[in-house]
Image 1 (cartoon, rainbow, N blue to C red):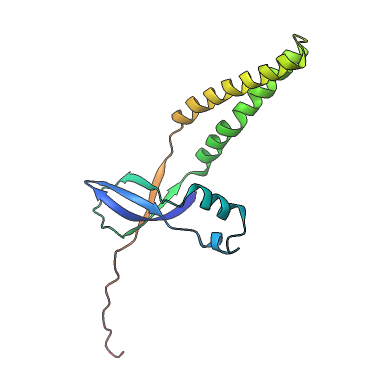
Image 2 (image 1 turned 30 degrees about the vertical axis):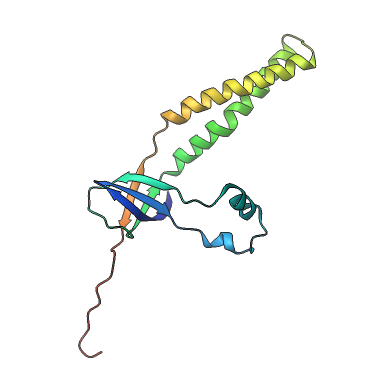
Length: 149
């Protein structure tokens, strides 16, 4: 399970829009790593994630959600491997079975990559991510004085 603590940014009826907290590991190299460069290039706008809750929430409240690892692996396989495998397969079939010149092998590889991309796109839409609520953190902890302190 992959767990992430999110903060409630806004609420609309029973749907809460959650924001992820910035990871502290990205600040360790003082802006010299690749992720810092890409962050500067593509902006650092925080994205919100809508999720329906049964319990009432308040803005600023923290929620811990979990995502099943197996779905992430299936998703990554579809996105990265299907276009690559289809591209390679089309090129090898064009070279081995049809004995066509290199230009046709390149065109077949591009077509195979596109077919793999289209299959990956439809497969990714069919994968359902099961998100579980691990914990809804209280907005504030009440302080009480204990006798003798």
